[in-house]
Image (cartoon, rainbow, N blue to C red; front, side):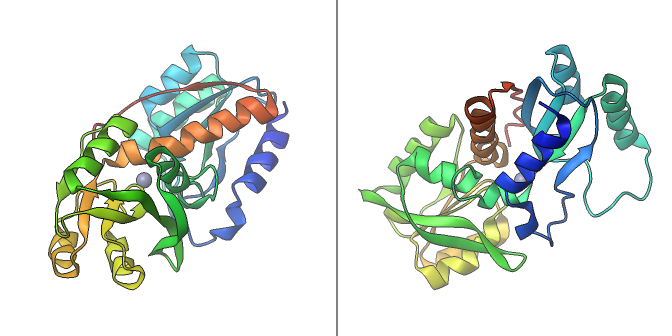
Length: 250
Ligand SMILES: [Zn+2]
């Protein structure tokens, strides 16, 4: 498949134009070979991922966290080294940040609900003026520890939790560093906020709102969307794909 065609396909599939305010330069960040036969997918753009992608014979790398945030002022240090790797190996780099969190089917949050058996009821978690997560309900109430155990099993992760309501039924989900969605928890009346990174700031607010906090890891909550995009490229575009699992454990 031609690089140009793949980029157009991804841009429209992932609705990049809906997130003009995203700090991430979403879309094709580095152009490599014109013909794409194999796509590598990863959560983070970094040297390890680029080296593995080259070794595995990929032409194109899809990531959630790209290299270009808020414009490039200079090319030196780690950015220089990373770009040199991509250019030397003629690898393309495509990044998709907020549009991948929010995507209604392939997104991190939609996939988290699916993996956890939470029935989606609406959007959740405002970030830069729009909601990027979802909230929904479990078929029945669970204990907070029981729900955390389910999350650990389904996402192959370790959770940190704070139990402030005693049960879990209505869950708001925002992948990654989504603690500020606690402000939406008050409006939408969820009993539990599931996000990636632990946040000290969220804790006293959650306590006063009676909302449980489940921190399941930034990496673990942002891998499902990347995997879903890989599946889409394989099944709908007949591209060969490989997922490069470079877990930060955080
Ligand atoms: Zn993230």
